[in-house]
Image (cartoon, rainbow, N blue to C red; front, side, top):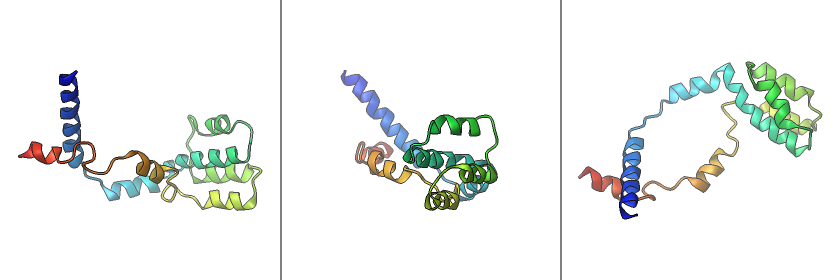
Length: 129
């Protein structure tokens, strides 16, 4: 069991070193978010509101709308307009864009992603020496 644990530690250190080399392209991220095809991500927000309003089969309804079909701004707007929602909820959904919608991402990061160095504090620096 000790050697297996050792392999896990070595693997975690290697993952940490690899992740330190990852570079984000803000331009690429912005382009992806501005692409018309990015609007399908808003189906999650629509499904959440449908569930809150106890609408029948929100997952299945959105699956029909999104699977195998291009989902753009117009598709989302038309679908939201067809839903029996309170006007405030409809406006809130229509204000969302792929760039502004983050869902539960920030909460999940805070809850599940350890702070840098929390897995094996100093391990990455020790391996570099």
